[in-house]
Length: 544
Image 1 (cartoon, rainbow, N blue to C red):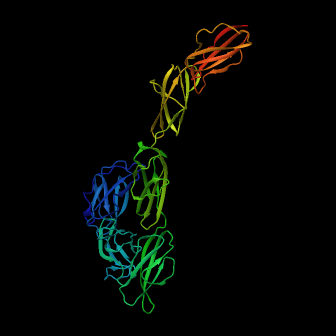
Image 2: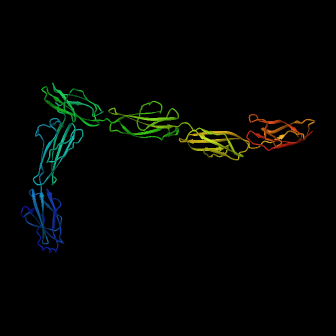
Image 3: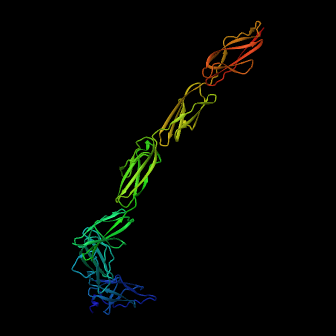
C-alpha cells in the first residue's frame, strides 16, 4: 500500500457488493471539515450495504463494514484532501482540510515602537496591529485587556483593523489569542501602562459640579504658561485656578495645555465632568389629609429622583410657623406637638453640588373630640320631645339614648317618645373622621299633666245689692302647682287673673264687679310646661 492507504483501516472486500437500487443518490460528508489527527465520515442515500469501499485522494482503497468511519490523519500533509466512497456501485466524495499547526500570531504597537510599553493619551494612545495566519485554515482573533485592579477594557478586535481599547489609567496586560478551525490556539500577552505623560499638565477639578466649575492645574516643566478651553470653544490664556460660570446641564470637557516660552503649544490634558444644574426632585407618599392621635406617629416616605447623593432635611410644624429643619431620611416619622390645627410637612434636599429642591405637604391634625350641642326640647305631641343635635365638625357616626335606654344611631334630630312626667337625660356620642369620640348630655323635665284650677270653698250663690247698683264679688282660686290663672266673667274674653309667666302662683284672689242678675265666673290654669287645665265655673245670682 501507499502511505495514504496505510492510514486506512481494514482490507479490500472480495465479496461482490449488492446492486444499487433505482433512485439511490449517495451523499458523503465529514463531521468536521477541518481536522488535525482524526477525520470521521458517514454517508446517506443508499438502500442497504454490507461493505463500503473507501480511499483518500489517489491512494489505494479499502473496505469497511460500518459507518461512521474514523480515519487517522496524523500522517496526512496539511492542506485539502478528498475522501472517496463506493457503495453498491454508487460513488461520492468529500473534500476536507488537515491542519496540524497552530496559527502564527504577531502583536505590535501601531506606531511600531516595540521597545516601549508605556502609552499616553497625549502622544501615544494604546493601539496595536494584530496579524494572524494559518497555512491550512482560517483564524479568529480574540483580545482582552485587564488592569491590576481587575478592570476590563473594551474595543473591537480583528486583524482587519487596529485594536484600540477604551482604558482608564493604570497598569494593564493585553492578551491576544488566535484560534484556527482545527482548534489550535496561539496566545500572546503584553504588559503595558497607560497614564498621563509626565510632561502633560496635571488637572485637579470636580467630577460633578453645579453651574460653576473651578479647575486647578500645573506642570512639571519650567517656564511654561497655560491655555484653557471648554469643549466647542477656542484656546484662551489662563492661570490656575480657572473658573467657568453659567454652565448648562450635562457632560463637559475641560482642556489645558502647556505653552512654551516661545509660544509653542505643548502637551495637553483633559478632564471630563458633569454640570448638574437641576434641583433634586422626589416622590412622596403621605398620610391622609386629615389625621388624629390614633394615626401617630405619622409617616412620610420619599424617593429621590436624583443621580447624585443628596442631604435631606425635614420639618413638621404648624402651617403658620417657621420651618424647624432637622436631618432626616425616609421614612420620616413625627407627631404634631401643638394640638389641633393645620400643619405642614416640608422636605428640603441639597445635592452634592449645592442644588436645593424643596416640597411641602399640608394636612389637618385633629386632636380634639367633636363638640356636640343638644338643643332645648321641643314638644310636638303629648309625651314627646324633639332635640336638635349640632356638631362643630364633620362626624362619621352618632349614637343617642334617653335615660338608661339602649344606644341607637341618630342624625341631626332626636325624637324621644313615651316620656313620663319627671326628669330625663339625653346622651349623645359622636365620632369624627379620625376616630375621636365627643359626648354631650342634656337634662330636661317632662310635665305633660294639665293643672286643675279650683275655687276655694263654695262661693255664695246669692248676693244682695242692698240698694246699690253693683257690688264686688271676691273669689279665692287654688291650683296644685305653680300656674298662671285666667278668668272669664259671663263668657267675656279671658284675662290673666293670677300669677304670671315670670312668677307663677298656686293661689289667687279674684274680685269682680257685678250687677243684678245671674253671673258666672270661669277659671283655668296654665303651668310652666304650657299645659292648660280644664275650665272650672262658679255661678251666682245677684238680688236688689
